Picture (cartoon, rainbow over the protein chains, first blue to last red):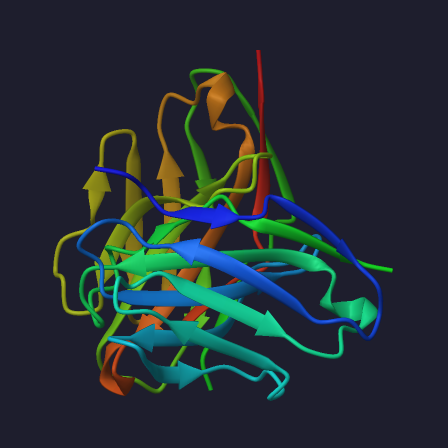
Length: 114
Length: 116
């Protein structure tokens, strides 16, 4: 059974650019959540997708958007990058939407905005 | 509003000794889940232990146990027989199950250092 994978591992972008981060869920998981973790802080919930629909959203502006595909892989898109978007972006998949103890995290993508 | 508070930015423990990492929470949900994650320097969040708000017994998973005191709104993690590999960041987190269970709130974390 493969775990959650994310790509790329590291990314450097310039302010104002757009970025797409990818996540492949663990086999059999239909729910994926995205988190932003700034240096020295805990993860902040961005949004969750369940069966290709956005299921809930945290306090992030609309320039943070996402997609979930029929195979339950997912993308996080960030437009008009700002310096404060520099962070570790984590995705987590779970087999059921409301099962809190079965959320498995990927290794993250480290985004640096210059 | 939901909130998780971890008041210990850093903790030191001698190898083979036990250590308690503190966590207090605030929520208006009647039903919620509490859990702890370990984050090594590699960045990946590793699930350690889960406690449901209606579970009467404290959760245990190997060397990890969760000291759940609902009236005090605390969910402290106890690691017994610390090992060098336990050195990492530890995050307490909560999800309110009444709201559909989609939003997980994390604390700021505690960095644990295990000394040989």
